[in-house]
Amino acid sequence: MIDIVNQINATHREIGNQALATGAGRSLLLRRVYDAPIEDVWSACTDPQRLSRWLGPIEGDLRPGGTFQLKDNAGGDILRCEKPHLIKVTWVFGEGMPTEVVVRLAPGDSDHTVFELEHTSPAEIVDELVRTYGPGGTIGIGGGWDLALLGLDLLLHRMTFDPASWQDTPDAKEFATRSCHAWAAAIQAAWGTSDDDIAAAIAFAVQHFAPETSGER
Image (tube, rainbow, N blue to C red; front, top):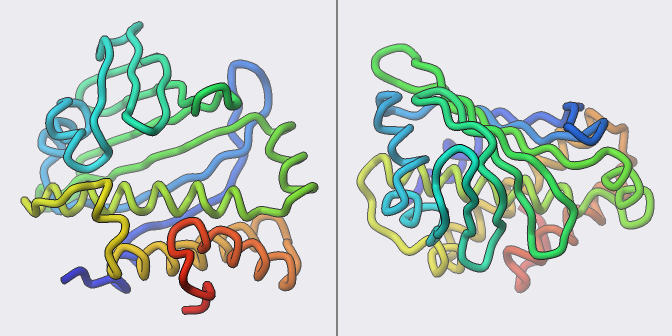
């Protein structure tokens, strides 16, 4: 049984600006502390067998300058891999817009690890999507990363689960719904989105994770 509220509260969520090689970017930042030494967290983020147990099956030439492809998910180029502190990759869904993901690790107190993940997309494209459709897509991306980081926590605590089918469980759906609300609060604080627009965006995002629910907590 997952302590859903504590898992939601374990992550700091932030909407910001981060430069890309191609220009300005809009970023989602997640930060949390894992109860595991940095070497263990690094291994979970770089060993293909362990990655497949929380993020999904991965293939490719997994080294700086190589490429990767997650099954039914994103692929891209491996830009940097500096053990045990930094991973930087491009992150592309099919023919979608190119984005970047950076993972930063730092040793914390008592053999814990501070974990940061920042996902940055081209500002011009994000701004146009938000103007046209609202921030539901951004909330959904944040919710997806929250589920992934929860999966990493379960792996580090030696829990066995299938990252694909687990997301259809009641616990995962409840967690994702609460995550969408948490991301909505971060977006509203950063972008000043109206209450009506943010409510519509939450409903849109929650439908992706839990289509049978109303989106209310």
